[in-house]
Image (cartoon, rainbow, N blue to C red; front, side):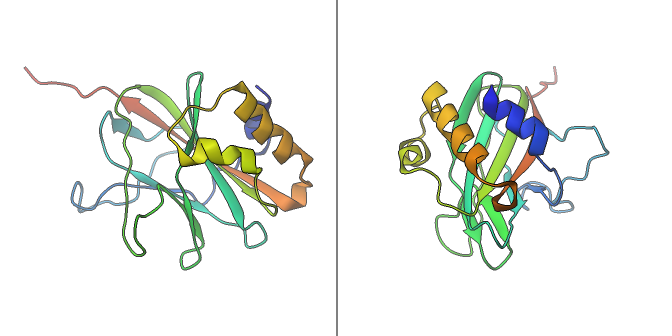
Length: 168
């Protein structure tokens, strides 16, 4: 609950790019949506997110929230493009994609930026695909809140995931 309040209070949506593989839609790579209208993806549809970085905040933690479920996402800071890439590429210069396979509805993708390293205890969540529990969420929130505002930043991208419509 504390982390959700931090995100509501501080998150910016500026400069975030939601991308799809060029093979799926060669005409449009970046999603453009009207204000207040969430981009829509279908279950299983591949995408990636590029969050802008702050030069003075070299550490980043990417999170996903859907309903009551939270998780860490693999991410990588790209010095070339000055972005945080979600998911992180397996090899330099390649593009990786993720997809939501199970849970339709609103999904929030958050990137927390920090001038200081995130606590080592968070590595167990980031290194393994395990859900963040209350302890992990409290650890993130307390670490982030202790940072002076000039040494932190928060970005948020929301998307709507829907079940594919089958034609009969």
